[in-house]
Length: 301
Image 1 (cartoon, rainbow, N blue to C red):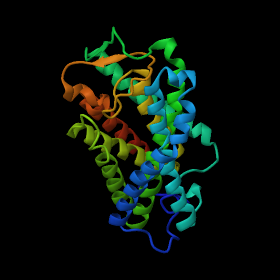
Image 2: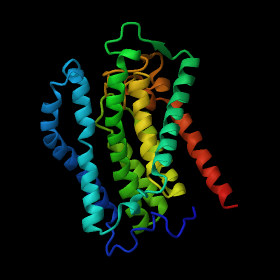
Image 3: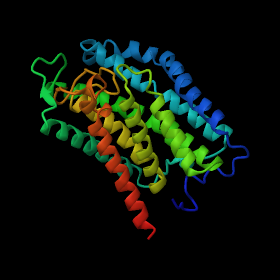
């Protein structure tokens, strides 16, 4: 795959010593788990401050999920510190160029919504989805406030995982070795980081690796990180708070536009892990990767 001279994949070539793949993986895990630990401590005052706000006082699960997602911001701060202070690079070097950033993010968000909606429509058309008749969470108009609040959390969480895996790890490994190595390791680590999630299975891990490949290819093609941040956040938001499913095995029943249940063969639907663990998602992701590769090839013919 050809790269532009100012590609973000080339942006760290001036770094005196790019980390090898072992040290890069270790650093990525330090970002994720170290940042999570810092975030869990740093957000305690925010939790206490919001706990008496009526919206959260009556929905403690919403507050807990929001604080958990918000704490991901401290992971991003660790990466930014590494890039700015240690590597002495600008944030644009990991894909955060200011030009048309909102347009790029919005397009990515729309793509994420469309991809998950297509998966849901296919499952619905084959009878693998039913509507929850006795929801335990707020649904519809009454849930709008909760949905909008938790969207803010998904925006932070989705962007953070992209900053670590596509913005930094893909960047430095592609510089140190080549794009293939960068894509493979960053996508595989992204999938393996979900191994401790509830109800995980091998299809879930494979699909999350495919998601990583799709996002990585998109970053390489567009030379930008904004769009995949939007895709990632929209993918999770749509699963949990538009359609009411689990998100990567996590119960996020704090408010949803509609509340749907997956029924039937878990291999097809994803079961308790959510739609991203089913073969319908595998199919959509493979098609999406194929389309992206085809577009890229056509651009160079």
